[in-house]
Length: 261
Image (cartoon, rainbow, N blue to C red; front, side, top):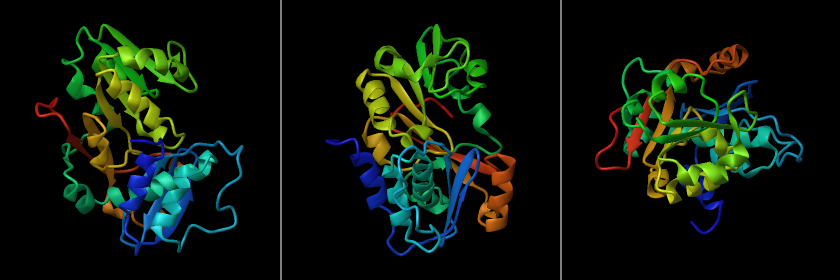
């Protein structure tokens, strides 16, 4: 990777040219995009609007997914959330994820169990989590040092600027994929992978693409919305509720001997 943008460009370049956006919804918590192939993508909604939008006068609906996906490069972070959701609307289709080597994590598993497979592995280790997951400590309590880094820190959290100091020293690093929206993901991956940490990307914002494994990520775990989410009415309802909605997790490991999911 020669540029921080290389990850984004590769994700966009692999999108089809003939698929369009049919619905784009910016909810208070989750931004969603529905495409003409029936795929629904999600991304954490960020509210940074200090910079002008790249496409303020253009509706998202009817535009090629590739064009809307390119908004992930925007420094208007609310708009970048739409771009990442458009990217995920393709890679979060079950058949596309399967073609890329992703497998179902298990029936009935939610994001509350995403850290559970690591409960034994982290014993006595230093663990860093980028993003505040309130259920992480329940699974990872055996860690010798459990560090949470957050842009808006709660009591006990480190500010996310501590990443430059903490991630290179960690044994396990879990990174929220909302970091793709605010453009911190490339640097966070550099710090974690470069420091030799077992590195995991988590959350419904995760692009399920194997290029992330090629960059040294050990596990990529993403989200497939249930088929009934592929309608404008359902998306509107989910947006109002603030919930991610029903769906299933899928994952892919890079390591030959992965932690069992």
